[in-house]
Image (cartoon, rainbow, N blue to C red; front, side, top):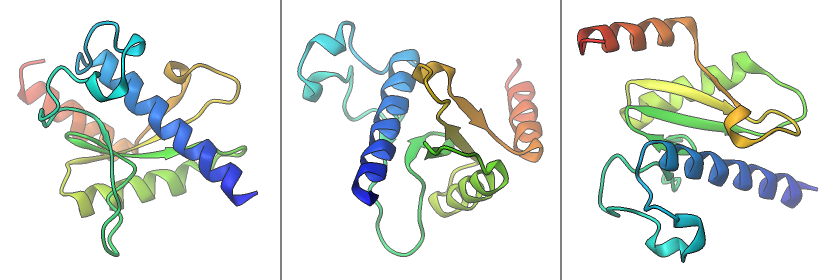
Length: 134
């Protein structure tokens, strides 16, 4: 059972990373029709959304989505408080400003999943956007 759940989680992480990269313009046009190795417009771009490799004791989250650290969750029941707490702790470990939990919505497309933050994080994002002129 554990391997099936791990595969489900890995699939969700990959789906979220692919969706975000596509929406943020990091992938080449028609990337789905080509080899995954050539999907990037620029493989060295720091804005590419990537799945993190865990190194050491301090977890840095599932996805690097600068300036966010993303924690992906694909579970039958939700524990939003735990997800957000984990995402915020991992953002701190990764040296990122914000933590976000990407929560899979059952029987829905990737883009219909949820991006969950605390109200504190939401206020900080609004403040940063306003400081940038939005």
